[in-house]
Amino acid sequence: MRVAIGSDHGGFNLKAEIICYLKERQIEYKDFGTYSLDSVDYPDFARAVAGAVVSGDYDRGILCCGTGIGVSIAANKVAGIRAALCHDTFSARMASEHNNANIITLGERVIGPGLAREIVGAWLDSEFAGGRHARRIEKIAEIERNNKQC
Ligand code: RB5
Image 1 (cartoon, rainbow, N blue to C red):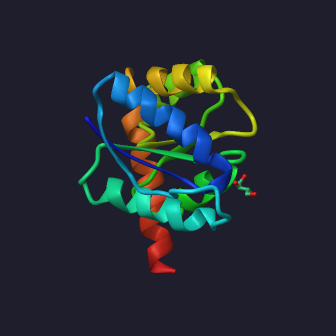
Image 2: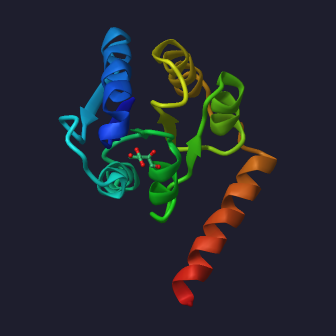
Image 3: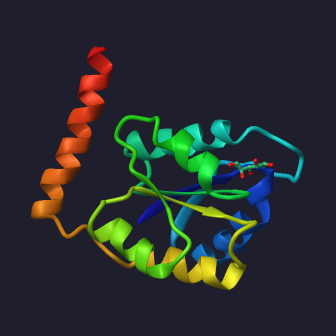
């Protein structure tokens, strides 16, 4: 399991917490920034992590910003990305099992570090269930293909 992780300044401290968690679990990761609390633009980091995941270099991505919303919107513009904003463990598990979410996004200004760890764990430790859900994921990919033709 190789994880790409990134944030803007609003998610910087939560990213640091999640990196500690990944280290504790000995999960391989790369930090795509940002590397300080200086104000930056979240789409830059969402694009970097999303690109690392769709390239196949990384299996999953984690993105943090103040709310988790901005990085989610931006990452979902990259074809092949299914980024899920999750602030509870049930959604995180479902994001894997039903939506095959290859990126999870979290908001530092919304949840605390302990819950964030549990959410990331629930997502990493669950797998896509396939079956009827695979048909639905394929329909999402079809929407992407149709958009490219416009
Ligand atoms: C930055 O102030 C904040 O807007 C950003 O981190 C994020 O919450 C956007 O969705």
